[in-house]
Image (cartoon, rainbow, N blue to C red; front, side, top):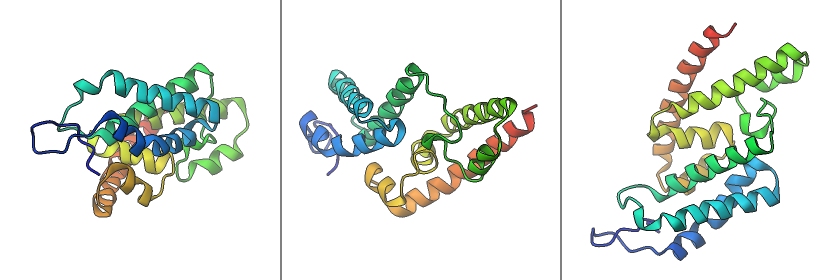
Length: 185
C-alpha cells in the first residue's frame, strides 16, 4: 500500500485510520526494541500517532510517511529514555555496534564508564549527521539491530536500495567515528 496522503496529485488518498492500521504493529515493535518496556512502548506509540493526527493535514504529499513515523517514534523513545535517566551505554540494546560490546564488557573502571558514555554519544551524533537518505536505515540496522527484511518492509523500498544505502551510510559513519575517535583524549 502506498502511504501518501496526497489529493489531486495522482496518488491514492490514504486516511489517518489506514495509516494507523498499517503502521501500529510495526511502530510498537520498533519502539519496543529501544525502550524494552511494554508500558513505555505503548505510550510512545500513542504519542507518535497523536503527533501524526495533530499534523496530518500538514503532511508533505511528496514525503515519506514511513520515514516520518519512524523518525518521530525514534525521537519520542530517546526523549523517554532521557526522562527516565537511562544511561545509553554500549551494553544497551540501542547502542549495539560491532566490536564495542567486547570492550564494554571488559571495562568496569569508572574512567571506562565515562569512555563508554562518550562513545555512545558520539555514535548517536554521528548517525544524526548522516544524510537523510541513509540516517533512518543505518539507525534501524546498526542501532536497533533490525533485519534487512524488516528495513525493506518498514521503508517500502527494494532490498538493493537498502543494501546500497546501508553500505554508503556505514562508510560515512565509519569515517565520522574514526575522526571522532582520534579527537578523544
